[in-house]
Structure formats: C-alpha cells, structure tokens
Image (cartoon, rainbow, N blue to C red):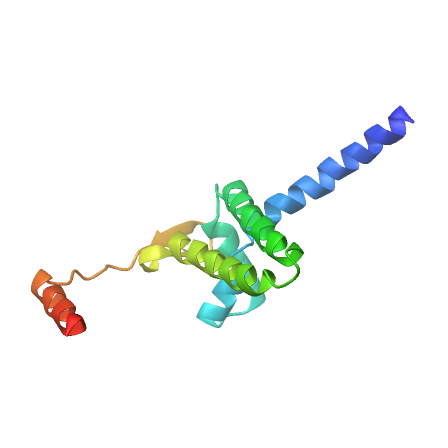
Length: 137
C-alpha cells in the first residue's frame, strides 16, 4: 500500500506540477492570438518566451482570480454575474501590465529572444491641462 501511494504521489508530481507551471507560462497565448490576429503556434511560442522566469508568479495570480470567481459561483450563482466579469477583467489587466508600453517579444531564426520596446511619446503638460479643462466643462 505504501509503494502504491508513493507511485501515485510520484505520478501527481510528474504530471500535475508541470501542468500547473505550463498553464502559467502559456496563460497569455489566447490574448496574444486575439490581439495580434496570429495563429496558435506563434501565440504559444510568444507567450512561452515572454513569460520566461514568471511562470509560477502568473499561475498563482490566475489561481487567486479563479478562486474569486468560484466563490461568486458558489454564492447562489448570482455572484457569478459579478465575479466572472471582474475576474476576466483582472486577467486582461494582468496581460496588459505584463505587456505594458507595447513591449513585445520576438524570436529570430536562431531561437534567440530579443525584447523590443516601443517608445512612448511624452505628452506636453499643457495639452493635459487643456484636456482636463475640457472634461470639467
């Protein structure tokens, strides 16, 4: 019985733990596919390269959001009407934060990863003040 339990535990460790890590690394593949209108392979590859070193961090954040959504469902299903949209918004915000300032990851033919960041143009303070005044009126 002990050997059987150890085999089951070993199988769980060898399959479930890596599966959780992979879910963290590939979390952004659907978002990349939709935003950049690219295929599944390219989105998976880009998500894999972009999340290097952050797989567990992303997984645990998504896990907490999932728990939040589950609690909403358990609250007489009515809570799901609020927690599901909020949960998905939080996941999109995580994606946007991860790829903020237009940073993107691209791989060349030699499988070396290069990170490129688009230059964010600075807005003059006068233009911001004028926009605020227009909104207030």
